[in-house]
Length: 143
Image 1 (tube, rainbow, N blue to C red):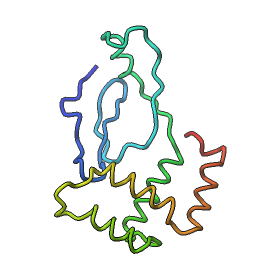
Image 2 (spheres, helix red, strand yellow):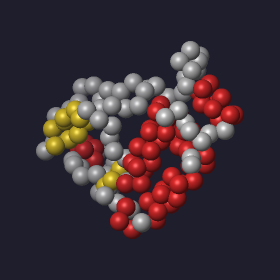
Image 3 (cartoon, rainbow, N blue to C red):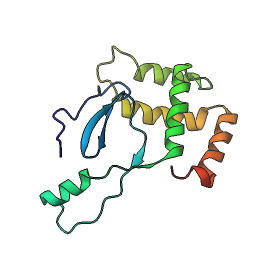
C-alpha cells in the first residue's frame, strides 16, 4: 500500500480545494473538496496493531451525507453573495471574523461552522423551507 508523504494539502484559513482519494490502495490527489461523509470501519480487538491500522486504510467507499453537502453548497453561495438576510450586528461580526488583517484569524472550519449556524437562523425563509424538506426526505438521508 502506498503512503502519502504530504497528507496536509490545504491551507488552514481557506476552503479546502483538494483531497486524497485511495483507489485500489493507491493515493490520488483530487482537485476538489472532499464531500462530507463517513467510513464504517470493522471492529478490531487491538486498535494499535499494524493490521488494524491497515484495515482502516483499506476502505475505498464512503457513505455520503447529502444534506450536509447541500448545506455546504448553499452556505458557500450565501457567503459569495455577501450574506443576504443577515442583521447589521451579524454583518459586523462576519466582517470582523473575515478581516484579513485580524491578528487571530479563524480557521476555515471555524468560520464555516459559524456561517452555517447563522445561515440556518437568518437565511431567507424559502431557503430554510427547502432545507427542511431536504433534511426530512428519505431519499436524501444517504448517498
